[in-house]
Length: 349
Image (cartoon, rainbow, N blue to C red; front, side, top):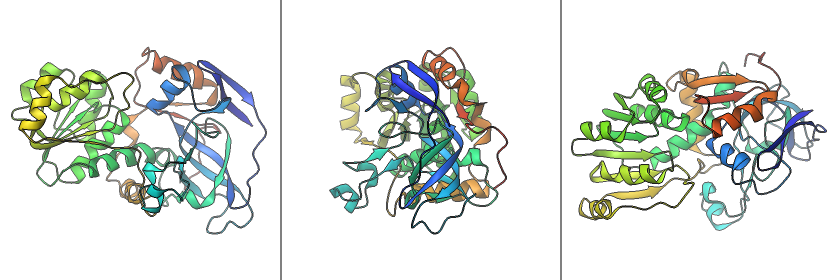
């Protein structure tokens, strides 16, 4: 089979590899679609992964191609969405149902071979069948949608809340905008430095989209009840505090590439307005993979959660290095980029 394998930072090769054999309790997955995550950019072109060589890619859907020994509940041909984390199920967080915080996890595309490949083998018990009629491309976008939902559930959002999504034009931000609307937010603002991405946020359901901090200050009034920060950029994290309302909350999803500092003025704001800051990591809960994943699938199947408008690229494996490198160098405009390792002729689910 063809895979895109990483041999070092920036050393990305299209290669041949044996198709894996599913072990006991495993299935062989024929990858339908695999989306690019922002973490792929850093892993492949800046920081490197946990092990080398490595096939990256973790946001994916697949068709079951072969059943390993002892697998039931699935049939060859089933379309599944694949949670990228493989928890240990034994550490303290796992036994409490906090799988996102597993201390000994495995992970597709960073700790084990991922889905920039034609086939992947993995445990059947972690998979979710995709509802009939739902597109395989949508099924590859459940992970970022579930991450956004996990973060929204970490906030104090209630019906009538005002919500700001920083980095609101990226896939997680676009899903956060939609979840905020579904949960009853009455004023939703998205901020993204890319004007093209800010326009996508309007399509996602934002009431207002801005592309600079100065524009944001003009409409912030007394601040937002809920701020979701998806970028990890130090300056943006600090700015997020400055536009949070009294007794509001800031939820951090973005992974920072550098040190983050909060200004003295915003530190004082945190205290004086009793603003809560919380982190949000991954997308999992009990029973694994959790209600974030099942809720996402339900809303996608009902048409409540839109996804197709954010896809800017659908490409073959041959384009992985060229495309993700360009994304890392910011030389192309993109929102959700999908790779289709086995071609674009995806069977109807």
